[in-house]
Image (cartoon, rainbow over all chains, first blue to last red; front, side, top):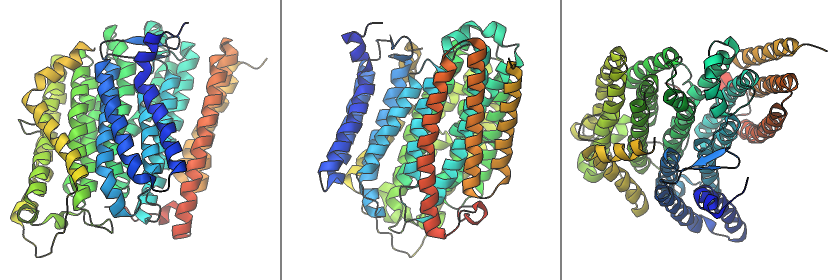
Length: 475
Length: 100
């Protein structure tokens, strides 16, 4: 195995982030007021790597003795992680100052979690998936409890930590069983031996435990218990990171394992499990979200429902489903970033002010923020012509093509239910009045991040075909 | 020589004990210990299969799992200490301000 300069270029997105972590650590060590520098430094680095990943998209390369792969679909995930994290950095700068947790370490840990996500997306081996997932999760536990003087934040961190490592336990035990029956942890080897393995109960138990482990991470019912508490308790911009890039990373691992099986045209063996998870998540998320009073908690339940829609794409068990899921993930990332970003602007200094009552009369007092929030809610509920509609459309079409029309129908029903709680916010903002003064001074960096996300939501809604083509070309 | 099934049954037993511990115990540290038990049952599976298959990968994985478990323990115990300073309890039933 020779490591050529071509390999080095293909690997450069990962190497740059890894080098960036070390550089930020050094800057943090030697400067007093590192927070200001580190924010913009990590933003520039993440944005640069996002661009670089798209630039290198046409060069699929196997690296390290076929243990790691870059290029093609993997680079789309690289782009999503880095671009999403760059927007989170923009949103965080002033929010962290407001919340009194303005520390440089935030950006270092954030970039480490991005490195973990990139390791998941590029893995060709279960052990790489596991290590990447753990690097990501451990960073997330720290970020969730970053506001260590705030009881809610700590409680969120503890719950996330206990349930997250519980999921890890399932995952590792499942990997043990897969290893024992397959003889190696390589996904390629598993695909080759699948014909024999699929009648082996021990292998199926292993795969089931693997799916359960990842269901925790993508927040699918019945493994969703941590999601509402964590998204509500964690600092708002951290919730934005957890709910977008964290979910994309977990889905990238599922796609990684399933798509070779789909391409080898093996029968859809896991479809009943995935379809059950999808139906439960969609209905539970949409129905429970109705009774929520806290906006962050409502978005957490909406995130559970969205995980359900994405799982439809996997349950469809065809290429269209996979590209639909990737499109959906892209759309969902920008919708949720915009939503959490706008909430972080409205949030008050004492980290209250995320309840529906706090948004009363926002339409007249803060027309710009209210307008953007209303647009994001329309997009999240799947009303055309925004990104959310086409995300749902593509996964539903994939499900219908593989003869699972009933799944698509349940999906449509659940989207209809979800319109209620998304539009409820719009009603509160524009038709309820309150005498309370709202003091919001939207800062430049946060508004820039929100504007980019909203612009992408509109572009993806107006020209979904070109982005879908980009995804299809990499399959 | 002990057949591989014995190790597998033992590890399955350990895993289930860990799961039951996580579900029933209320002290955060005991729950965390149960999670460690689950991870170690997975390690036992890996080592048993590694020796059964004559394949080194499983033993390598165990090192990774142990390293990851150590990193997780460092972060997790720090979180538990931080919450104890705030609330003077690590009982999960009393850590419940977040609910609907």
